[in-house]
Image 1 (cartoon, rainbow, N blue to C red):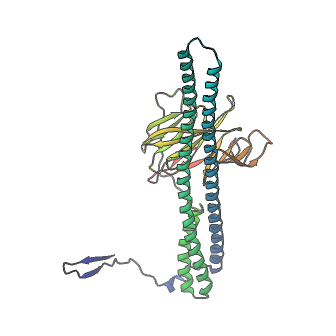
Image 2 (image 1 turned 30 degrees about the horizontal axis):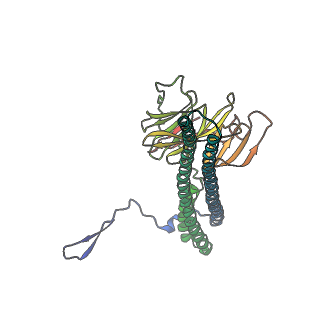
Image 3 (image 1 turned 180 degrees about the vertical axis):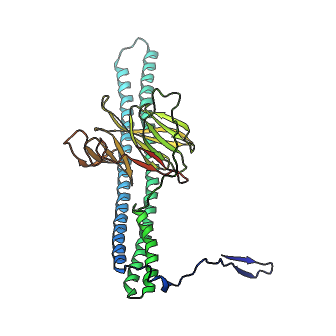
Length: 380
């Protein structure tokens, strides 16, 4: 530990504290007990470096796709609002022409009816425009949040590429120097582990330290609770979908229900879009309801936002870099956040429920989530 102090005479003084090591082993003494596979290290560096490069390219393409989708949706909204303005003008003109061509016993009544009709039409169009603007603002916030997250990941990829390339070049020049081989191996393993974490390949095993049950039933529930999905927010709060009671419930860090919102039908699954926004897959075949409900968490309250209506079943949902992946019983679809169907990624109609994980869920439905500090929320 090094502490820099400045005395009244403004002379800087360094005070150095040394902590005593319990054991000191020369590097030369470790080279025989800890063999290093230099060739294997080179191969691993090349492999991880290639994966990091591909990840960065994927991130950059995702940002471009996200910006393109947002631009298209903005242009579509602007056209809708312009069409509404033209519609309002045409309706006013039509009402005036109709009033002038009709014979009325009372000029006041005629004027009153015209004004009421105009007010009703304007009210409907204004309400539509307000909803549209709200959706556009919500999508803008989503794009900003997702773009920031992806951009941060791109910067990490760039940094890892530089570090891995330098290590790769260094390892190639080591030759038969065992001491340098050991040092390079230790240093490389550290940076490789960080890179693997970024790639989602940490390889760590989790141990269960404890187990507890929490009741999330609230007075307005008509039946028993059936939790079909959960998401953990950065602040430690937990969102759960209660399929039996058509609800999404917000739990505090003590797993007490602090807010809830009602849904049209059965919530099947849920995924996190931003630190304060989720998308819920809602589906019931009997009523032909297949939709995605967006919900925002604001000051520990749930605010239902726009809905995305689908033409197929909506049983599973996941979000990745500004795109939604939605599964039916037999297919997996990719959507933009604006609701545009990008493509069908997979389909198997050989049975009623097909897919890698079977049981009607192509997206993996077993979720481990980590609320701070170190706790795990698990749902099936």
